[in-house]
Length: 246
Length: 190
Image 1 (tube, each protein chain N blue to C red):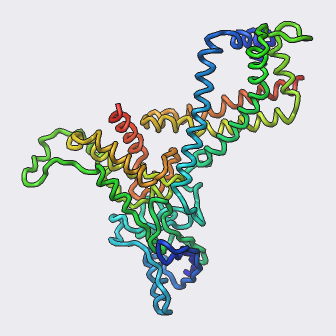
Image 2 (image 1 turned 135 degrees about the horizontal axis):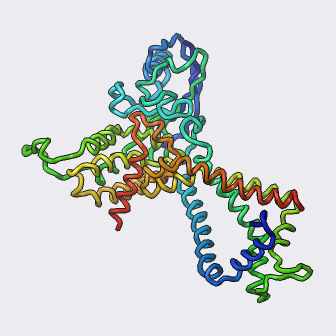
Image 3 (image 1 turned 180 degrees about the horizontal axis):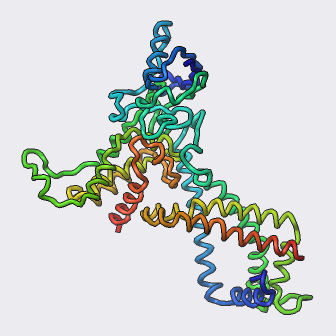
């Protein structure tokens, strides 16, 4: 298929960016979206032009590195997938595709489609961990009874890959789905109870400090999340925060 | 009540307008609640606007969220405009009559009995005012369609949010429709 791409080009974080049009031809519908960008970049390099910078790593949908905003949606029009798992069969021959970086004041553009998501790391550092020593003296997994439902819900929350699609898609650039998932994965398990109150308070405080917006419950994050993280995690975080504040 | 009986409406209005619990306890709480709600709404909107300093060239919000949830600020501003109109129409004259002129009788020259029903009918004679009321209540419905269940999510009651989805939708349609009916009823019958 032949496509027109409208791509955000920005030399560096201090430069002013703009949308630039490109044509790509002979794109296979079996290609992933990133492979299609690879084809574009090979053409640009051959012409002596600067290739489009974009984040990618595992290309298996599990690392959370790829981060494009495609035709007005984080990770594009498919559901439950990251950009690397978005395939060109989702588009039609002759389509014009708009590709932008994830937009948020807390995710500044580094270059082209690459954004700085280290704000997520700082939120994690503020409390997204447990201090139980698991090195060398690990207990038998069955010695602490945990209900199947709690274990499953905690596991669902833990599948968050921190890609930032929730922030990108939220009209308020809110990070509450990410923080809600990280708080929930520990709040549901006994190992997470020791620091539960400090965790939620510190992570929410860091989230606000980073300049993310507030959740207004549009539910867009849940729809666009490649891992299907539920809005229930935001409600749980709100409950945890209220509990910790009393 | 104004639809069913002018006398009943007058009686209840006079009771509400002169009862000290309503006037000096419930009314200030309600006014504080409304002012607090829209001030917090504006602060929220300001913070959220700052959180995205560059807009998307193309954003397909309709793919993942409802129009109501994305435009609470606009439906809220429309409701605020209505509240201002409503205050100019009813509340300010009422405060003037009772607290400045000191007239708590509920009567008016040229009107037999209480004045409340006559004032209501007079206000809804003008088609522009009726249109403004109808539009405002449509926006109230849109505001409630998201706001009702959203409130439960905000306080952590996610299961209630899901259980009350249909109740919220019914509430957001029935309540505004009731108010629209009152405005249209009095306009068409007088």
